[in-house]
Image (cartoon, rainbow, N blue to C red):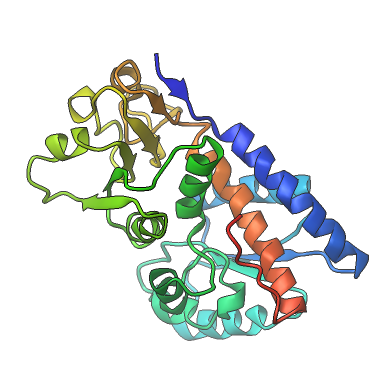
Length: 293
């Protein structure tokens, strides 16, 4: 039976780091605030919005929602995001995506100041991750790193296979793993003999976006498996599952994250930490708030 790498303990660890930082800011009359910009009312956006509001309230952050009509024009959206991002009382900006089909996301996120881009939405922020400069990495990718660190899973020289090459998880996560001197392989839908590549890994990280795709044929004994996916469970209407078929994989591997209760549980806490860090940076331009926490 595999050891479960649950997110609850990691979340508490992050909150314990946020607490003293918040106390220091509050002494100066500052309360970190995140501005969430939502276009339309997608069910998954509303679900994440409620979760984030609750987490902010629990840790002591301010959270403001800017809900915009689905038919907003490109020009109006860009102007509004640019204007709201400049507010002194806003320290982090999060634009929910994907946007409606008539809107182009890239020029919109480009007007968010890098120091307030707390989920690495813009190309400038992504470039900082790839070059190792100061900046915020995507919260989901950082959450995976937090889980690995909390459970003392060694990365130095280890073979890590990342299944998925998205800009929000797979690619930036590979950069973060390389920075820890792991040997990283990124896989995708065109990888030849994907099960064999996955079985050869010391650590298997799955972010492919397909429910229960990774079954026992993809894993081997002794592995650590990190499941980043969150999908509607095809076998349990109303329930959620990961990209890993937990029932078949868990008896084989050494350690595994559950879904729900794994990576997803950490992501909102990580976002809150980024907002607190951003508040520090805006208060003191010379302060190194991107340290490895």
